[in-house]
Image 1 (cartoon, rainbow, N blue to C red):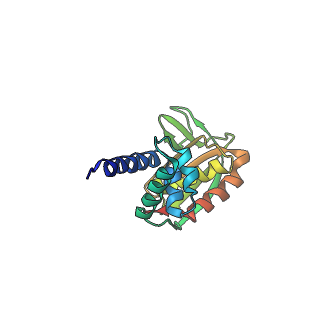
Image 2: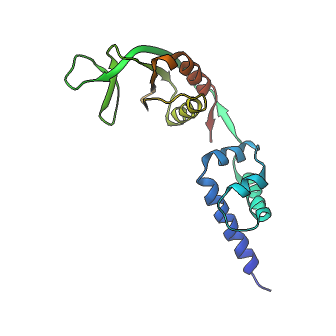
Image 3: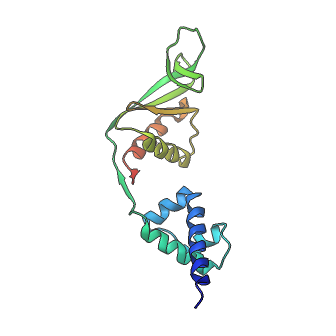
Length: 173
């Protein structure tokens, strides 16, 4: 009796898992149980029969932890008048990323500041939520329990709501 089909199945399963890991949104959807396995199998760039890939996806989903989200305890506020900080200028930076500083300098940007139990997962969820709402932050960072997202002034109020909504449901592992 040959073991070749079993090895091919394991290879297909491993390839399918690797393909899912390249698409975090699909892994999240598998955890949440909201995936059409056949459609997902067609989407993935995996060689093999669609039904076999769909079966590998089902099995992978069974091994994943259930989707869970937690609310983060953080106060969220908005600061208007944010602009680029010039080196050696009078304006103190509120956020510096890659050498670019932003502070309260009378600029046309708004900072959304969240202080509390925020971390990289909270920032990632926030950026996903902002993107879904059509906002494109100029800069964003998180450190030591403070998260700052810089957006256009006109996006400030809507971005604030998006940040609050994001912090109400940060995925947990």
